[in-house]
Image 1 (cartoon, rainbow over the protein chains, first blue to last red):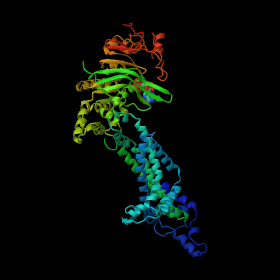
Image 2: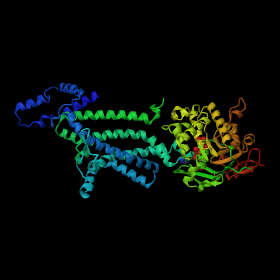
Image 3: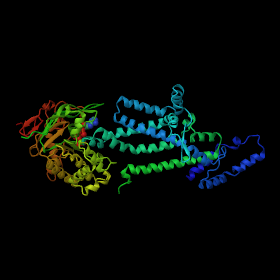
Image 4: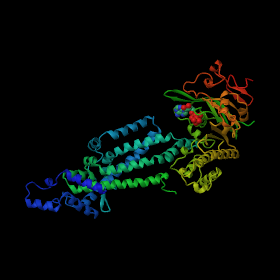
Length: 308
Length: 323
Ligand SMILES: Nc1ncnc2c1ncn2[C@@H]1O[C@H](COP(=O)(O)OP(=O)(O)OP(=O)(O)O)[C@@H](O)[C@H]1O
Ligand SMILES: [Mg+2]
């Protein structure tokens, strides 16, 4: 994490000097000096980094240059929007993708399986922004069924607003959620199909059949449990990636989440926001990997999770 | 005479591969009486496993039973629906596989796997099922069965895993168990144990066994009747003692000669020369002709099965001459 923070800090520093964006060129010199001192930009890089590090360890990521509020508050206020959108998308993608993939792996030659595989190839290869625009054109503009931007009504829990608890909020979430879920969906289909195909050929399945198990029991009890390990891995990574990089979708659908925040802060060279964001993303991935590792132990008894 | 529990007539199971049709099982006929132990021997690739799968209706594509019939207690299995077939498997006929490391599911406890097998045919509540599972494990000689139900396969040795597989195969006391080299992957001492346990269990429950092996020595200590298979065909069949003492087919003789116990002290073991022919391009006559010491031009023609008392063989020039 420490190494990570250095890289991020220096990297962001190298992008450009925020002063040119923040301060009007015709501002008097004393205003200029005041602002420079106020944000500590007169210090050499290593000092800025040290100050930053000490503050971060105390839970202080500094102030946004642009919004002039604590960065942490800013990020936390945007987090719920992204969190619910990404969870919605990844959960949806997994819950629809895994059954489709298992089916396609169970019946590899059926035409419905070929259609499913076609869908997954589309999910991989068609650019997300294009699908987003098509979705807006079809369901929002032409048909007028669903809203195309914003979060809709929210409900306050823990002092922050959530859209998924209201019908209106859910309807706002549907289009960006579908857009965002396509990649996960495609991935889950692939993974479940490959795993199922492989397992269907094993002696375990044949022995189950020889014992008179029904095909549904074999799929639900044997296959699903066996493919769950790669599925959980990819699920975690997808959740992380989607949380961190929902940029395109959030921009297209004007979803006020982290993706939009980071794009705005890059355009404005809002360094503290960028740094804090990237560090939080790294933290997120570390946490997710930890959770995945712990889940493995529950799923695979050979790793010694449960019995002695 | 008791009615046979299983009657196989002219069974042909072929694999339709890209390179051509593999005739893995090609005109196999035999019958099995209740409680009988039948040995099926032959080299690797002779079609023993495919025969076993055919009996359970478990041949996977590109394979298919192309002709012949399998009658279980007089009922033609080819006429049954998938669902009816499933209801027979595990209840009337079941199978134990060669490699106990591959048959059990590594991420389910042994108890869960036995439970699945129980519930495939029997609706019962959790406690009853657990009692039955415990009894089944105890019967196959697993100590402390009740607690072992919660263990995973990797916590068992190979021999113990095979015992679990046997317990699953026997859970509904089927009429027939196809045992496909169940001891080949195990230590010699454990082989003998499992062999004897399975024989005793089969005797207790009146289950008939089809014991598949490439090892004539193992099978002959167990089986009442022997079938020798070569390239998808049964080349010789008869009561074990008769086949061993008085083999008629040169291939059977070759198998016997290659047994260590048959070799004269100080002499090298005799091997059958040559190798198994490709099943893709079998000659029309006897498949063993190219390797046979007695082969003559007549061997290139179709060889009929010759009945001789309780035995039968498929050879124009049997050892000991024609009757
Ligand atoms: N899925 C398949 N596709 C094509 N050919 C197959 C398939 N399964 C089996 N065969 C062929 O069927 C023949 C018989 O195989 P089988 O497994 O029954 O032999 P076996 O007598 O059991 O040998 P082993 O002692 O090695 O177990 C082999 O030649 C094999 O190539
Ligand atoms: Mg075999």
